Length: 403
Image (tube, rainbow, N blue to C red; front, side):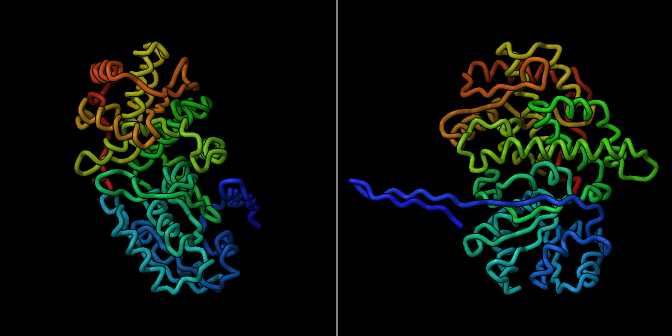
């Protein structure tokens, strides 16, 4: 039940209400095997399911989802949905809502969303606005989906050339986590997701950061030790890294689920990247965009004396060794200043930029940074990346790898 307090005052009426929000996570391997039951248990009470699956995942599973629901005697309409960064827009949102209407979706019946961060962003937002709130259950299928987008309650679409500018807060009723989807991903997508793990761990979880630093190349090559021939210890390591990252994000996000406090460590890597990510054509993969942002943030930290050169270079080397972008030609001084202004407006008049400090594993949030410091750090950043392999450019940094 909602708890509400309605109070008459001398000048009017004050209303205070508290809406309870509860959602859970289930871990199950090979979730669409007929031996699995996590999803069936969630839908058995409805007897049917509208299952919307990312187009690439739909092809890879090749009828497996239909077989799963048939085995569990649940009527399912399984539909393929193609969401790209270029089509993460209101038109795609409308297409998804049309699917809800065609299915004759009931008010409290949850939609099953199977896919990566783009899918959960767009379809989650469609659920948020359809009938002012339709429940949904999500099954993330990418590394970014597992440890970032599908742990978050924020859903959105791009608008007017601005990333995630239209959106809201809409928690799923449940999330089913299946690590084995990672075995279907190309190396570029594993690399893309590692950037999000490095983002949170570099600030609050040095143990996980060091694990990625030491084993990141193996994680990319073996798809988190999900191909054949690896030891139980290696498999346990991959599970530990993913679960630790999920917990790191939940600890930071849940107490501030409506962003009442805009001083958020989760903004690390997301101060300049929203503008940078959409600037090139084809657009940058999210992980590479935030990597450039984080590496530039390190230069700001060094200019301010909050991190020394040794640890700044160590930070950049981790990203470079994994093939993540330290820089991109689109990250010009002009773009940096434009992104700064956009972020200040989004964050209520302050930059609120997290930067790594000390010996890593620590951070501070800068309320504002002078234009002089921003420009000085940008020059330092551009000079520094020249000394790294590929001149600081990333390996397969654009969404063209998804074609």
